Image (cartoon, rainbow, N blue to C red; front, side, top):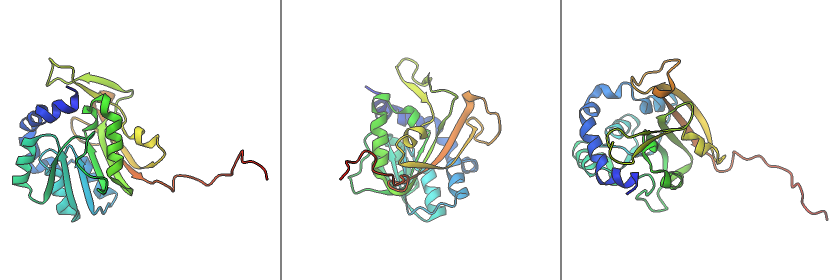
Length: 231
């Protein structure tokens, strides 16, 4: 069983049980870097997808503030049941980043992945990247929040010490930027433990939010036809 399957089967439910009180507290929204970034950049999305959305607490607030449609993909059936009861404006679908439950016509102009990719199994990471790209519209925005150590590292997932489950910490925006189909709109680091901006955060505690814009054509310059056969 890979990590995606573990979170789909059980660990997603356990995460909600551990964090339900915290995310139910209205004060939790005060330092939310996702909403803060959306407001700072004056985004005006019409359709928002959050992958790994838990019970939809953030999407509910995004829908309220920005007046957009909001969709959650979440592996935890318990989180979905809780969210459907609390936040009827949020559409919930069960799934993982590597197997999004949408047909090829689905397109969103903002996709959010906040502290999700570090849990994705390494065998399905690139599949998840392709799935994320598939559902993001050209010209849309991808907002990634995750750990940002000085060098890529893995740390054993302490909630399942008897299993081979890891937290993989790296700059996930780099994967999308390497395609040359995305550009950075804004990127900044913050303290993961306090969720506050401050300078000189130790690498072990450092997290990063990056807002990328997908652009399928205007990232390329027209070049000459070097090597073309002469008439």
